[in-house]
Image (cartoon, rainbow, N blue to C red; front, top):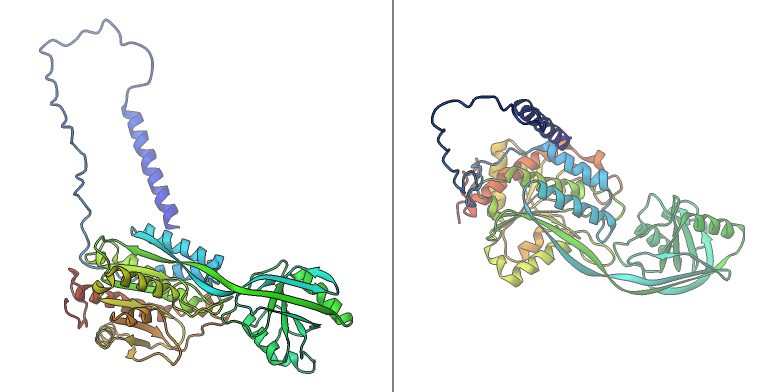
Length: 472
């Protein structure tokens, strides 16, 4: 809406300017002026001084003056980005079209804010199936493999499972050694397959709950072979299996594949980045990922908007990390690990003074938990006190992490303000689960904390209230 209004205003201004020029110029005709008009007596008028060749030409050294104070954090702007990612694009699992669409959106948004944008591509190996063959009573049926499925060959009875594959759906049926047929929906693919394996199944076929086929990914390698079917094939096979004993063979050839992803890096300086502000934009499979982590990504973009054209912004890189979530047998934080490995290889890691990570910045409790290096956490707590924001220093639960760990392992001081208690990694993590007030608290705290980090990195800005970090 803002862009449309701007273009309309420009068009109106241009029309008025053209109208003014038209009314003040001579009529356009081919007639010569009358010959009997007498020329005024007197000396010829002096010729005007020639216009210098360089008049009105901009000096290549002229650049817009930098602002000496960052803009206020804009929560409405952040919510717009969050909605675009979680509702407009939806699930953004690594290596999927959703992740690519999110990368395109972030790259364009950073560019619109005036930043130079780098799309840092990388690939990670994952357990993959190279081919799938499904034969039922001698007839070949179309099937596709899950990313992350175990390979193998199974010949067995095909058993239609009532319900959607929850543990209770296997009660009262003999799935031992069978290839089970389950409809898609409600449960994650990983859970359906794990429940089938726990009931003794030797293979799994999951058919779509809407027209057409689908591609599926597993966060961890399955213990039994699994494949997907389009809805027409699945419904037909279910009727056949329910009508009488049906035998089939599922053969999945395993292998290793590559998932391609991109970190989106926005910068405005040429001397390298001393402060990194990042959040991952990917989600787990089949989840809109509003809290985890469209919320954190939206704050990264909102901070880029607040600091665009501000003194010290040349010291900052704003990053949308890809591949933070685990999928297909690959561990998480893949994007940040790749970026840090590149910084280490080039020696640029030595000039990085801090990393601010934003992940799960909405939902849950109204208290911001400050995770990270001691001096950064204490300074952020003091800033939060000045802003009237409820914050406490803490640590992450066991077996959890985020992209700050990649920098921390490389010796970079880190700060990770986050929210505990938010619903994540479940289908209910959608835009309706976002709490705008909590997002606003984390956003305002992150804005002043970034200003403090820029000051500590040598940026020419005033320290925000509560900042306890001095220039390095």
